[in-house]
Length: 557
Picture 1: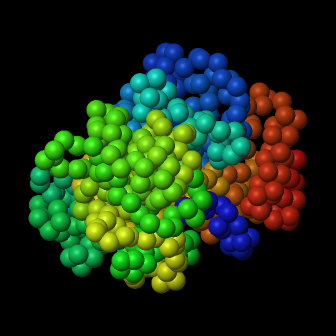
Picture 2: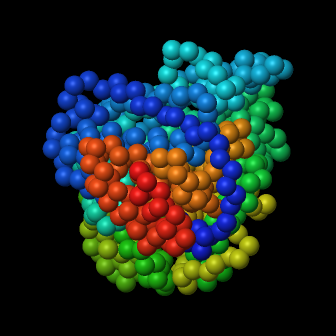
């Protein structure tokens, strides 16, 4: 079961680190939106979740600046990083809702970064500038980002979205409608623009590596025992690797050590009859979080198809033009198995629930790939637990003899998101997904990580970034890992980074926000900062000594 990284790692937040400081990166917003739209939207909005903006445009801009200041405090660069930003009607169709997208505007050959650099190796331009300590593309911006304006529209919300949430302090307690967390998505997308993206991809049916890169060099194919930088530019083996779920992993030692520290032991679905076995599963993003009802006989749903027609076991029960459920009375009190296809996952679960099912298992309809079941339009009505399994496991859970589930068992030797060597998996589903495959941490990771392909309500990117800093360092980024937060030149002694937590980076971003929003009212600025320090202490993110020192620095502002 996915858990909150903050809750899992509180004990780590008080470890000591060094105090060496490095130059913080300056990240600047380049607003591409026109008047009255996107970042300039004048629609009135009430301050929420630490975001004091009073229009949608202000709240979006504030969240953006907060994310840029957070990343800027973590990274070190003598060259300004310029980020183009805008809102656009990104894709919102059944089964695919794009919240944001980002990429480096250009890539720079290693030979231009330093003498002796390889001509076939490229860096994202912001990283190239940081390594060269000079602007290699004078007059050009560095990162392109845009975010969905569609998810606030009725047509997109009809597919299950709830729009944007603009708070800066996690989702609780204000994001009651489970809206997409804009700040978390910005942090994620900036990560892509700064370098968390690969050059290996499909162009049509052709597997192609555009150039060697830091990301591709750290991505390792277990299938072929080689890094992606070692594949040929055009290579059929790479096409196989890109579509082998769980078989591409990260090979950076520090990242894997942190991932192994954070990853949870894998829970498996236990089957006792007709053949005992333990099987992997993924909880759906809706329904009850209490999985205990997943016990007892598993019954495969049947559809009322015509004579001679093949039963597809979709369980749509009349929705989306599909047939009604034929064996409704037999589902009462049972765990119901349904196949993926046609209607929304939540519709399938609701249909089974309406027939008395106590739990639902949805099986994928493509080989090997784990299934991520998003909420859809009926999610709020589903009160029973829902899990998903691969097509292969789904095949084992049906048959002539009764299949009986006995709940769950924890495997002490297997971890979510890691392979057998405890290397962190990258996202390579069996069906290649442009823009997602190969450029994310695997969606199997538990707890949720910042750089997974789907937005997660449990991520707290304002205070923790799991393995992201380790990944960036291994790609070559200079960082402020050992630095401390300074407010107006006063050293708070609060580490910028501490075992996946970013208390100092958070303080720097918050201080910039308090200063900008106080309108030169010093007492308001100090109150803003002191209240925030108290909130961090309440979450065990600061020690009492750090609180005292930070308050001393605030008093000098």
